[in-house]
Structure formats: C-alpha cells, structure tokens
Length: 476
Image (tube, rainbow, N blue to C red; front, side, top):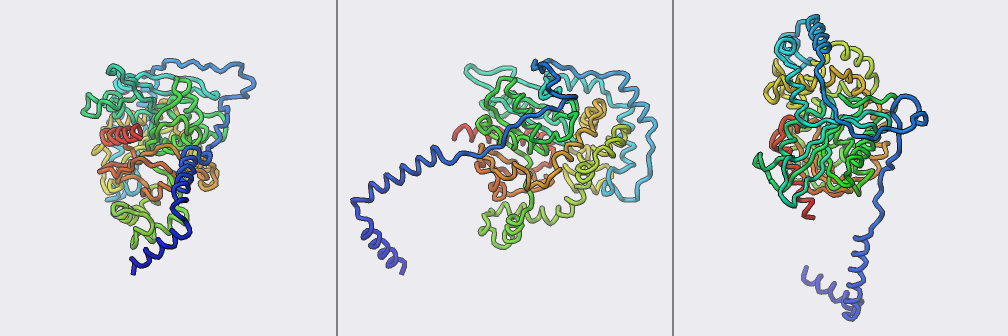
C-alpha cells in the first residue's frame, strides 16, 4: 500500500515538475533559504533607555565621575562594638516542640548562631578574605556601583581571558562567587580545562551591599541591566559572557535582550517563566504522553516528582516575596535594627533554598553545605552597609506589574544560552518550556546535586558547566 502511494506521488510530482525545472527550482529555493538565514527578520530587542537614580536632578550635576576607583572594605571597630551590643540584647523566644525549621528559623538554633557570631566570628579576618580580590567603585547614572574584577594571574602565550559578568541575587551578594572565581580564572590549577579561562566581573546590584541604593522609585532589573552594560563598556568590553541566578538571571537575561550583539553567551542556573495556560496544558499532557509536548524521559523523571513535592513547598517559601513586593520598608525597619532578626531572615533562605528537606532539621542543615563564617560574612555585608531594606525594595520595583505585561516577556532571547538545572532549585523549568523564551539553547544540563545558591554551594559543578557551555559556543 505504502509503495503504491509513493509511486503515485512520484509520478504526479514528475508530471507537474519536469526534470528540466528541478535543478533551477532547487537552486532558487536554496538561495532563498540562504538569504533568509543570513539576513532573516530583524531580532527584536529591548530599548536600552536611560536613567538617573542619584539624589536631585541629573541636570544639576555637571559631569559624572566616570573613573574606576579602587575600593577597600574596612572593619570599623565602632561597627563591631555596636553589633556586639545589639547581639547581647537579643530577646529570644521558645520554639514549638519538634517544629525545626517548619515555622521559620528555629529559635533554639538561633541562640547557637548568635553565640558564635558574638564570641567567635572574626569580622577583621573575614574582611581580609573579602579584600583578597580587587574591589572597585564607579559612578553610573548617579549611583556608586561596587564590583570586583579578577583577572588570571598567568596566561599562556596567545591565550586570552574571556570577560564574564556574574550577577548575584537576593539574599546573596558578590561573596557568593568567591569559591568559583579561582576555578574560572585559574582552571588549570584546579583540574579543569586550562584552555577556557575567564576574567570575572562581579558587581553588587545597586541597593545591595557596597553599591549605593537608588534615591528614586522605579529602580528595577531593566535599570540594573543597563547599568551593568555601561559598567562593561567602561571596563573596555564590547563583547562578553553573562552568568546569573535568582535576580542575576533576570538581569543578565534582560541585558541579553537589550544588547544581543554584545553578549557572546548567557549562562543561567535559574530560569524565571510564568505558569501560563500553554505550560499548564503541557504539564497535564506531559505526564501521560510526554512526546506530544516535546518532553524527554528525563524531563518527566525530574518535573513530576518535583511538582508533587514542591507545589506546596513553593507556597511555604514565597511568603517573603509577597511582603517584599508590597511593603518592604516595614519589615526592613525591623531587620535593619536587629542583627539577630537579620540573620534569622537571611539564613532561613540558605537552609530551605539549598534543600527544602532541611526544614525538618533543628539546625536547618546550614552547616551541611556552608560554614558559619561564610554565612555570617554574607549577613555582615548587609548589616554593615544597612542595605537590607533597599535590597528588598528591588522586589516591589520589579513586581509593580504582572510578569506577562513586562516588555521582556514579549520578546525572545536569541543569544547562545546555557542552562544548569539544579535538582533542589526553587522552581524547575524543563528544556521544552525554556525554548519558548530562549531560542538558542546550546546546552541544558541536569545537574547531579545542588540548590538555589549554586556558585556558593557547588562551585565545581557550576564552573564545569560554564566551561562546557562556552566551549560549545566557540565551536559554533
């Protein structure tokens, strides 16, 4: 039957398309396809825009200081004394029996953390560690923007380091990248591919840590992306790679949509996509007929157990978001005044966002992945700069309108993209969903372990995936 149909089709084709016309037709079609591939439709981009976030009016400022100035973090004795005085006055309360971290940070374990912070944590020592990498500040759009810029200590003859901008999220900081930086800038010393070397730029989002907070309403991920693009230009980079998780994912994705000609590749360990009707249908069908919606076997093995385990978990972990997206200054007032409250608020995220099963542990599993020195150093960056309220305002500015009405939702991402999907991440986005926004996915890796703070928790895994992604991009 099938042979007869094919023969009939071939005869009909030959009848209407004689052989004398086949070659010219093929050449014409090939030429048209080549023309389309080379020129295609113009890629839609986000408007770069302009902004001024400093005090007063831009017109009153004669010339912005565009110099890149060295910056040194200092441990002021007055700050330490004030911290100790406040810690000594902490008022604790009794937890419910067997509540562990299910009601938030367990107050019994908080006593242990505060005791360590007060009596053993050495801020002078940690500041020396922070200053092992070169820090800088520069003024952009009226704000003092802080960043670290780390170059390889040695390059082979003819070898060039690839500029890589890495952007943190909340409640993290530039310090999240301290473990991964040497793996990227000195890979040969750490058993990694010595031919893929980076110089790494890690800025602090304005309003976080040592970057000045906006003095005006409206500072969001679009403004941050534009400022970081200007930062890279100021450092002399016309082309560069990007990497981000949490807010860093959104900022770097938007930068890729603003200036795709400058972004050689975008690597993400967190993907932000809303659950629209099409994805909901895909979710329902994929469980029973994954091939109909383009899901792989591994997508199914990852997605559905994750959904079963985490749909309720997402509700448990998203209360902070509603507060910070509506009234950040209210809770910010409390956290800016109480170091114990600040530690509880931030470190609870490093517990359950690393692995939500840690909710069932009295100590929250905090030291299973991190040291108290590392965790408290991140908290101290918020404390000594008084930046917790301004960091939380970033949520209100970004959620002032629904996600699907935002400009970046309406256009795709065309730059080469790599996605590292960590199993304990807050949300899971299978490749078939990611392709609806990221049109040029070069690599999508299901990581063997790890959660939300990938660079902090699993630097070797993340560094290897970044190297692998860049290697694939440069072979294209």
